[in-house]
Image (cartoon, rainbow, N blue to C red; front, side, top):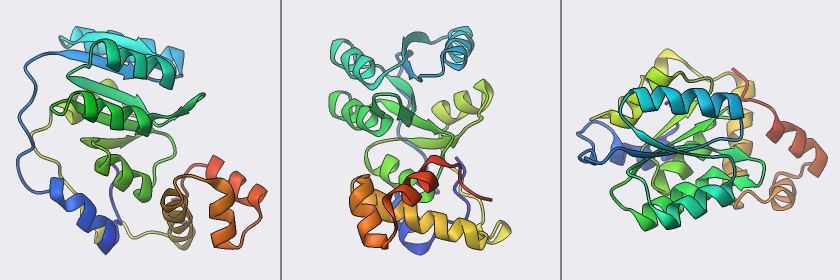
Length: 200
């Protein structure tokens, strides 16, 4: 997970999972992969099957939630932004249906506020795309979570502003209109910012 430059508040929220052994791994190897990028989904599914997982592939939030209801998996790899909704809803439902499950969030729009939200909702880790099968596998099977030293990679001014916007967006339950109002920003301007990847 790309967690550099997390501020004091975010550190406090994430520290509950830092610096000590993680919960025991489930013995079962059922795995849900939810991603609307079909080529990536199929490649990752094959790679995980080669590593001993029994994989269920889904492309939408609706499919993912239905899969959880029929047979909650021991592991899950969930894309955050999907065509019909947000993968965080699936992570939350996964932890409700199977508390011992280990799920990670994948996203091309990584930000600290969403990382904090993902962990609060039950995600074990948070990986920024592009992430390869080895990196994802090690995140799923990790016994500890390592946090990089924030001083080694200080944020740029653009990244600080972007993170602030994301934090307000999450506090507004990802409501664009309310976020724009609180930030005194035009709604379309905010939508353009939210659609872009995080600045370096």
